[in-house]
Image (cartoon, rainbow, N blue to C red; front, side, top):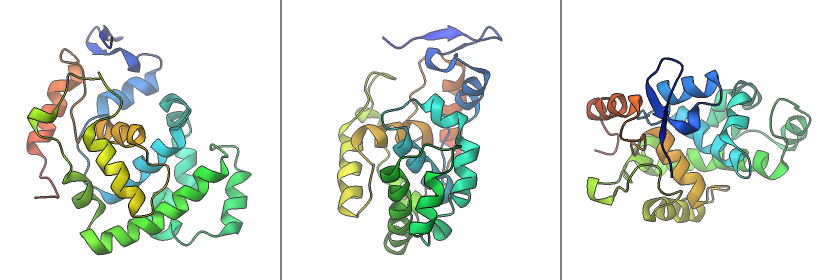
Length: 203
């Protein structure tokens, strides 16, 4: 069962984050805090796709390399990548060199531009799926949900790739669509306050 453990400062945190200082910083300052910026949302859904079959710790350690390789995840720039860029990225030792995942980012950048034309923004699209209180389970007790499955199906209909229900649920956790910090985690209250102050782009 998921739990909390005391960090270096003696405060309780979700136990998954205590492996490295970088992981703790990510947990304390990013994970679960609501995000309404399209570039950051695009970056995260892409990195979650790269994580498939790997650990987030692996991806986080390479995040700056990914940002450099994919033009800081500016989807307008990535959408223009071609086969030459794919071959360049397959030689980049700083990232995960998986052809399918690299091609998915380029494909998804093009899908993101189309989504913005249709929905106004990526943020408006994703935040309309924010679960209500009655739809939430106890923190960190599942890896998918009915909502993540629905988003996954819809994204795939729109042409997105590497966006399965588990990937989408991890995205929802990280981008603040749900507050999945453990009840006694030091960050849970901070995230809850940030969510109250956050103006949903879907409203």
